[in-house]
Image (tube, rainbow, N blue to C red; front, side, top):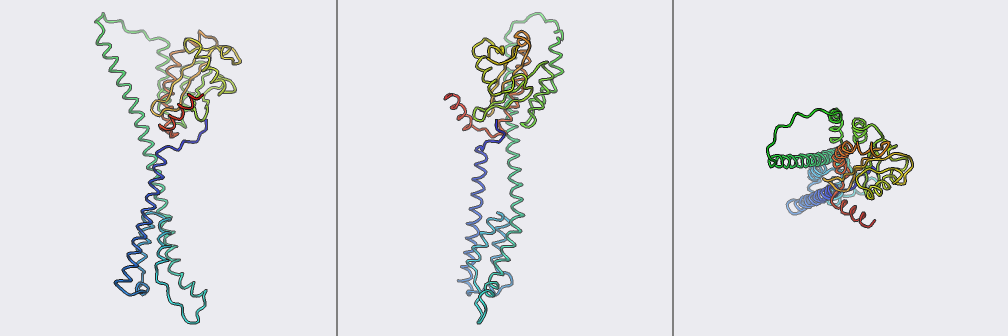
Length: 342
């Protein structure tokens, strides 16, 4: 799977907003320059501005560069150069000397617009970066809020089921099992996996897999449009992760449950694998399949609940990765259509 992000609707909206700001800045600067030029012609005499210490066009150029950056500042300089009153050529004055004398003020405008505009442009880029980070953090917050809401609904449902059951004698306190102790010990690694960002996913998945299972474990993160990314222990699948993942999926559809022998999937090697696949729910498109390889089908079945827990924690992290990659509703619809065509 390629590591580049998709260009989502949020990026297109930001580009459209930047273009609108640029056009508004250029139009505003042109209007102000035209008003100043008209004021000189109708309220004063032509060439009046040339007698002043500072040309009034300085105000417009500085405002344009300070507000909108280099592009609008240079556009204001070009318009001001067209509208300014050109000095008269002296008798016997060389053309090059006259051009250098007439270009002094426009060059001053251009230098100032570049200096001020570049400084302002840096601020604009930093502001846009902060806005993008804020949007990404809001997406992460929405993802966590959705998970909390889903868990709250699950708790309410369990409470209703418990209230509907007839009263019974108190059951003895459960005796801690080896499996329960294992899950408690693995809670830090599972929590880190669920809260991992995209670039933290490989390390956190491997740590959680080592804490829960005692064999090769792989995470196949698959984007239908871009391909497959293999994380974890490659021995669980073999050399060709893409082909092996497709073969295991196909074999799993022909059997009951999620345990598949490698020979049934047409893959080399012995033993069996336990599969657990989850699809991203917050931003559809990515799927995550956890593959645990055991010595035989019985050992694979015995690890079923741990594989399911690992897959659910990976699914939560995949949701966040899906947001980071910018997979939106349009991308998800295209991915589903591609799957139906295949």
